[in-house]
Every structure is written in C-alpha cells, then in structure tokens.
Image (cartoon, rainbow, N blue to C red; front, side):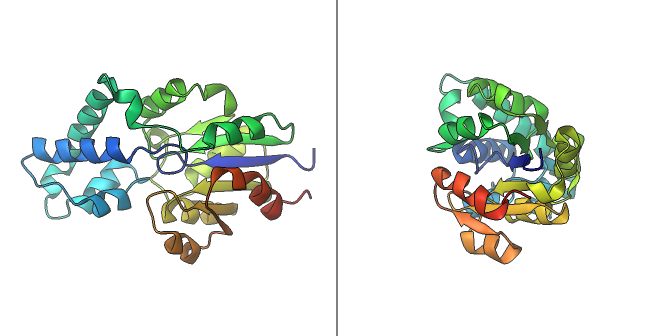
Length: 226
C-alpha cells in the first residue's frame, strides 16, 4: 500500500509517566555510591539517554564511579519495580491506551518503540500494560547507540519495511526529535513529558501535541498519503 505509515513512540515521558520511578531509583543509586543525588531537573533532563551516557552527564566529576552508578541505578529500579506498589510507578499517560488501540487497528498504520530503556525494563512495561501485541518493532538501549543516534529508528524502518518519508517519531525530549531528524523521518513533540516544549520546537519538531487524542489528526497533517 502506498499509504502505509509507521509511528514510532518514545516510552518514558511519552507513553508512560515514570518520573517517580526514575527519580527514586536515581537517588538510591547515588546514595549507594556515597554521592549526593542530582536535583530533579538534572535527572529528568537525561531521561531517554542510555544509562552510561546519562551517568557521564550527571556525575562528570566522578568518572571512576559512573559504571557503579549505572549498576546501582539498575538494581534500585528493579527493586522498586518488584515492590508492592511497583505498577503504580509507571502509569500510562491519559489517553495513551485508547489512541494506541485506535492506530493499531488501522490497516495502513504500523507501530514501533524506540526507547532508552533496557530490554528487561521494556519487557516489564509491555507486559504490565498489555501492550506487546500492538507493536511491530521494539528497539531498546541494549542493542543500539544512545539517542540521538538514528540506529533505533533505522531498525524500526527495516523491521516494518516502511520508507523514512512515511514514518514519524513521537517523543518528549530533544533526543527524540534529533534522532528522528537524523534518520530522515518526521518528528512530533509532546508537552506532557520531561523537556520544555520550547526546546522541542527549537530542535525541529513538526508539531507539539498537548494531549494524546490530538495524535491521529497530527499524523494526518504530517504524513498525508503519497
């Protein structure tokens, strides 16, 4: 079909509101290494990057501890996920499930994920929210360079066979917008995530969405049938 299209979703800050989980795990990881945790704004600014890159930015004065910080964060994140209230730490944003289901039901639309999460973390989210059947490609940090490198987007395009001009990424950070532009696809920003909306516009987002239910119309605007 000439109108086949691909919608690639970031996860943290776009599909799920995981900031409470991330902040708690980061604080625990730094404490385990005897270091003061960065402030909330600094932590949320690195959401979307792979953990080694994130820790290098958060602890530039402690290069010797960055590897241990990565492992301590992973341990803390996993422990929180297994806690009795673990499911409440990463809820879907309002409207996400309904829009995902609507798009997945379209014959001409394919869905994918490009996330800085690990495979284990992403598998947990897919199963927690019963999302696995909706996506034709799921790309994680374990298998690719950190955003904004275009590798994850390129893998989504290969998996689905969709041309770059018929694909769009939806994300809440400049890393998502930069990644999409580097791969030659459309990029849409969301205003409910972790980077200021104006930074997404400066990065080159084609449009900014203020709610999930605005996504179908935005897709039609940026990807009219060829």
